[in-house]
Figure (spheres, rainbow, N blue to C red):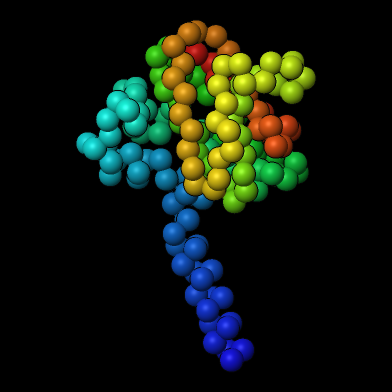
Length: 150
């Protein structure tokens, strides 16, 4: 009985590792966008071909709910052209948010707020105005990022 249980656990871990390896290696956006580029509509994604390649995306890093992780939003600062839609993907195993502003400034969510993002879920926001947009995770306020729109 113990051997069957251990076999089931090991098998589950291996399957999960294979299933999430593209996400953890940073290849998720590129592979997904290339496979689905012809089926996406403006309701699902806006932007240009650069956006489809993952250049206009941010990943919430695995383990980012731990302050000592060092990587939270990757890239931490993303520079895009006006009119670009940015996609955030939660690559961590816990809930996060993508909320404009900062906890110190008191202007949370005035531009955008993803609400809770479960593991593997995405949030998109179009940036139609030039400027610098700070954002953070309301559940883990040490997680901070920035979108610079030119």
